[in-house]
Length: 287
Image (cartoon, rainbow, N blue to C red; front, side, top):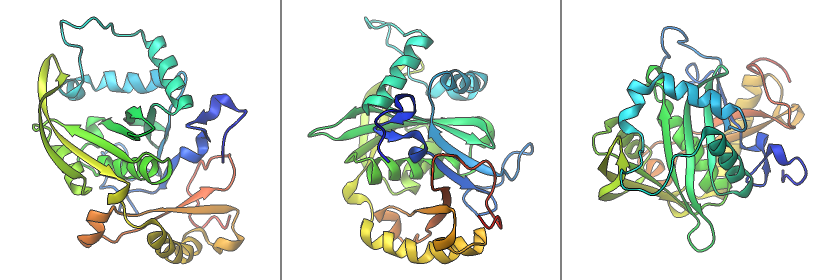
């Protein structure tokens, strides 16, 4: 669905709902390990573009967990001529990047509560067709598989569907969890970039990874395989045959490296056909 008139809900030329990723019962279905004591088995994981005042709500979560996130945050070097924008300027720029296709900020929600952010920045189209992925996750959801799952969903979306050819991820060598995410997803490791980015007050080395269209699995072959696997699973989960349902189905599969290594899990997801979003699980709903 292309977006022409509803400018405020238009992200990269598409209706915002078309870029919203939903995973019902992510723990029960094996996508995540058990959550914290306060929410060990959440009902739904949602990954969607944030806009307007939602940026403030997401930033408040980041600030609350500052002791966990601050060592990994980018900072301006002392001799720069740049100035940190006000938060209102940041929000306007982020929303403009969404409309123009030059940046994309996803909020990660567990049962409606923000728990992280995944961003595609430094987007260049034309001959480059590239961007960079950065992210953070609150401490209580760290180590539960959330980073790997959302990174896979976002990379599959921006490379497999939105048309970027290549996305880079640069990780500090000390950040073992993020290195594990990149290597676990089979991203191509390019090597060390000395003093690559100013982090927490000093220039820091980074290890560069990337994924591009050529390292994704053959889309047509896997799409056929996914359709054949997900349509019977859809009826078993929802309670209505796929062809008769008021819902649609989508699916996610591993990249080429992981597929060749033997990881053949295809994630099937029920989604609404039209704009109204799902507000609860559709298991046995007969929709």
